[in-house]
Image (cartoon, rainbow, N blue to C red; front, side):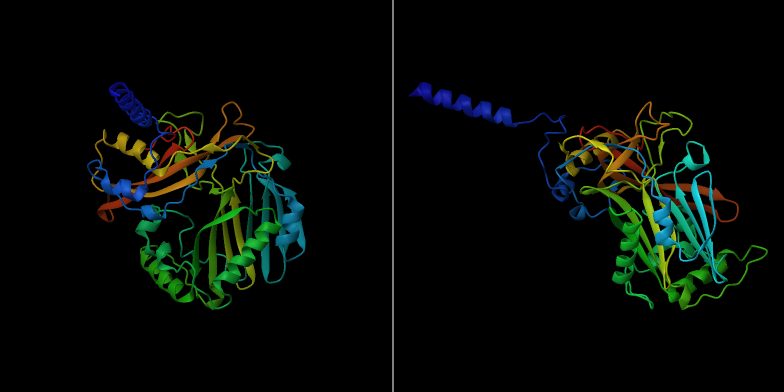
Length: 400
């Protein structure tokens, strides 16, 4: 009987040891709730978490893709977008260029093809640019920063560019928000941009635009000549920003740095081929489109879905590194997202072939101090991305 009891105890001990995974294996770390983990973990000195951890979305598995840029059909794009008769069409360095004019507006469209139609290589690809210029509108100031994510330096210092002053989904005088968004999504699908994820939007109402214009005049008061403009309800617009969507995950749309600070090639280690679509919608329809670096996913190669590390796993990697660093006071982890990131395939850079890898992307905010003769000492926020491969658990970025 004693022998049976001893054997039973040994079996129990073996089971306990077998269930205790090694701490260094990020693929096997227990799946803790991120919010619970952050409440219990000791933070490195001067580091804080400022994003809402309860709103971080995740999936348990995803495929890795290898893809090149999407090339839209120029004839289809021109047919769906241009409202006037084409007056000029020619190949340009970035793609096929169209001009369509009427007595009240000019339309300019470039369908990007990486320079193929012009006989050059290396130009921007994977999208289009479209602009409508109406009488009297040509040089009006923007009154909003044309970017997504954290505010850049221009937006931090110039109140006239601040996105946060505008509502993200208010109804404007000419159309309700939902109607405008549906119209934009339908039009984008008709030209070949269908797998989209809305990431930010702004309803640029007349009242807020006038307030921003007054800020603009104050900011420009030291300039020799500042032209005066009259803003009316006709200037109201919606501004929509979309990411490309692959399966259940969006693709990263922010510049980041690959590696540990070692430059590779003429562009260094900057990862700038990140798809982003910007659309401006006004009373008479879509008047501005900018789409860059979209990938051709239907023609991409992919493997089987692979298990992904959790947000807790990725955060542990970040915190482990940051505990060994002397951080600037006020350093913050201000966002966490599970996204696809694009990395050029070595040896195939000229062919513009990229690996699309699921990754945890953390935004790191650091205070930046400087001195300017005009305004003296000042502080701004500097932003970077800390990127962790969600399949292997390896750190991809050079951001520290």
